[in-house]
Image (cartoon, rainbow, N blue to C red; front, top):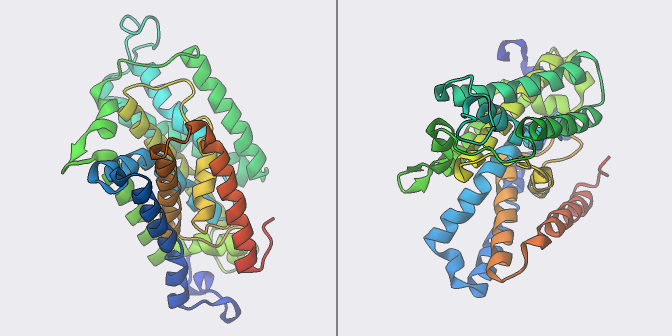
Length: 340
């Protein structure tokens, strides 16, 4: 794919060029807020800065952070994928349904595949969902928002249908390992999340393919005229995003040792809140993977502080919505360009 990209296709024009120092400064924009929340958290409850609680925050955000990474890639291209939250539940749900023994789970599952295929099946389902989204959006030119909203509903209904609205349990170790294992004293899901973000930073920041995503999000017609295969890149991006969402769902299922019929419901609100507060533009072409990571970290730190302060969990959705609105206002003030 990178062979199809020319230097002119991914190099911004002189009129919109920003210095590397400015770009790095924007990446660090949330660091003072993260430090401030850490100080407030310590004042609320000294437990906040203890290593066990820090690991707990990182683990609790690890699955959603992978969803944020997937959504960030799509948003940078100027699209959005609402179906990621349903893929998050459906992919491990399909694997569980095909693998677990109904004799053990009181009728749940069909037991037609061996446990060894759990991870490949999960990732394949995610990739297929992304590929189908790409077919409708790229090949048939349908509106991405409407397509992925429809897919969100379809996939959610499919998971409810195959599970009968119940929770898949008695999962094989092949499905629970990544979400429950500990590597070097830290949950494996944390390591996986961090490694994926590092890979995302490298790909989007230092490769032609990554820079092509920004070119497409900035002006798809100009990118196409410059020789970028925009349709192929958009399609691949949706497939990768779906695969990442499936992996995130696998991590969650492994941690819970189950796949609830409602897994992922409402997760998209946290995903958009984290991406937007991290500086990812809903207009496309702007934002960084590191910024998205600081966004999800800040969001979960705030939630943890509220939990330690005794604030009911029911206020979480209010927080997510408020964060999105505040982030949009700040982006409008600092960027001088209205969100559309």
